[in-house]
Image (tube, rainbow, N blue to C red; front, side, top):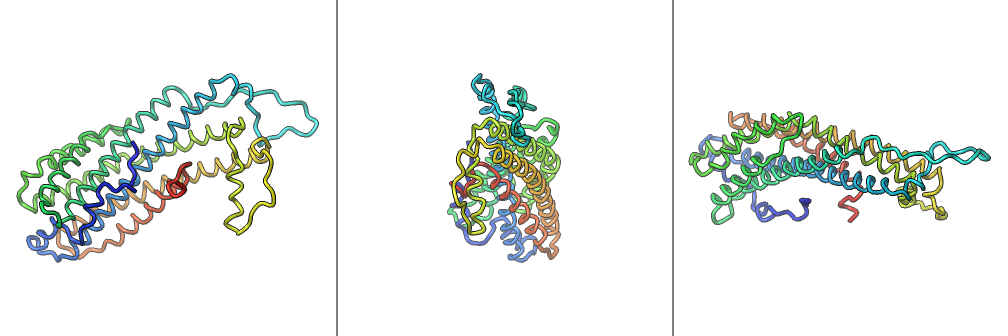
Amino acid sequence: MRISMKKRPWGSLKRATVGLLIVLFLGSQLGCDRQPAIDLAKVGLDTSTTLFNYYEALAQSTNDTREMEFLWVALIQSEQVRKTMSLDPCNPRPAGAPARPARAPVIPIFTPNHQKNLNDRVDQLRSRTLMAKELLNFISALKDYSESDPGAKVEDAANKLGDAISSLIPIPGVAAAVPLLSGVAGDLKRWRQYKNIKDRFRVVQRLLSNIREFYDQEKDAYTAIMQDNSTTSAAALKELVKMEWVLVWPLFERLPEPYGMKWAKTVEAPETRDEFKCAFIKVVEFRNERTKANVENATENLGEALGEFDTKITEFLARKTISWDSVTAALGRAKFYVGEINKMRLSKEEEK
C-alpha cells in the first residue's frame, strides 16, 4: 500500500502552534530558553518528514521496478513478441543492404531470483517507510500541546513507533543494523514508566541517535537498491522501444515547449523509425545515469542531516548556543534530490 504525503494522516497534530511539550519542561528544568526548544521541535519535524519522503521514494521506485519487470517477463514469454523483435535502432541497416535477421531478446538480469529480490525489497523498504511515518507522528505528538490529553497521545505515538521499529525487516548484507534499534523500541513501549521529563527526553535523544547509526549502516544498501532499480527499468524500457511496444512521440512532442516552440508537424509513426527509437533509448540511458546520481546525493545529504541533528541535540542538552543552519542546509539538499528522484518516475505526482 502506497503511503501518500498528500493524505497527511498526522495533519491534526501539526495544527498546533509553536511549542513542544517535552522541551517546555526542559526550558525550566534544564535552564534553556524556550526559543531553542521550539527550533529543535521544528527541525525534528522537518528531519522526520524528509526521512519519510526518502523511504517512500525508495519503496515506490522498487514497486514500479517490480511491475516493469513483471510486464517484461510476461511479454517476452509471448511467441508473438519474439517474432516481432526488432534490431538495434542505433545501428541502422545501410540503404540497399540485405534485411537484418531477427535477434534474440536481451534479458541480462531478469531472472526469477531477481523478481523475488524485488518482492523482498518492497517489503523491506515499506517497513522503513512505516517506521519513518510513526517517527513523524511521535515527534508531532511531542510538539503538540493543544490537545485535551497530550500525554495519552504521546504515549500512543511512542507505542506505535516501538511496534514499527520491532517490525523492521532486515536487508540482506546489513542485517546487523536492525538490532541497533531493539533497545530503544523497548524504551518507547515503556514510555509511561518514564515519569521524569529528563528521562523521556533522553529516550528521544537515544532514539534519534540510534536511527542515525541504523541509517549509516544501511545507506550503501539503499543506494545499491535504487541503482539496481534504475538499471532494471531502463533495460526493460529500452527493449520495449526496440520492440515498438511503446509510443515515443509523447516525449519528443514536449521538447520544444520550454523554448516557446512547437513542432511544425506531427511525425507519423515515430516509434517505427530507427532515428526516433535510438534517440529515445539515449534519453532512457541519460535518465538512468541521472537517477543514480540523484539517489547517491539524496542518500548522502540525508545521512549528513541526521548526523548533524544528532550532534545538535547533544549540544542542546549541554546548554550550548547552537545554530541549525548545517542541519537545514543538508535537509534542503536531500529534499531537492528526493524530489528529482520522484520527477524521474513514470507517474509523478505533479502530473496526476
